[in-house]
Image 1 (cartoon, rainbow, N blue to C red):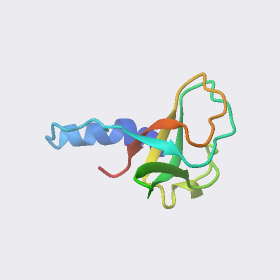
Image 2: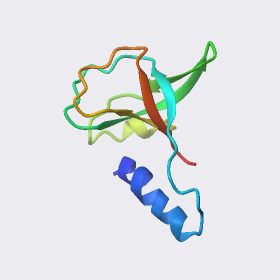
Image 3: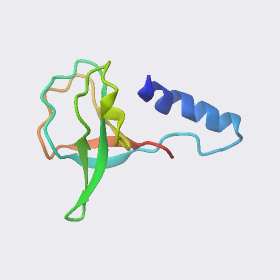
Amino acid sequence: AAIGLHMVGMPFVKKLAGRTDVQNEPVQVYLKEGFRKASPQRRFVRGRLVLKDGRAWFSQTGRQGNGVVSSLVGCDMFAEIPAGSPPVEAGALLRAYPVGR
């Protein structure tokens, strides 16, 4: 629900408020820790931005199950894992969407 609100609901609210910059613009980040599950469908992983050695890294904020709410604590971005992806190795380049913009 949180990701749906961020990706669909917030652009709608911004549009209703008269803003023209309604889309969530993605940024490129490197995955700090690997993601062990294959992703038959597009998946959004909750995490935070870590700047290290001149690079933008994405660090997961805990367990990533659908019903897990605790991983939203400290979450400042959602990383996208494309549909049909095998487990993703650490260091892989991902598209991520900052939260709260």
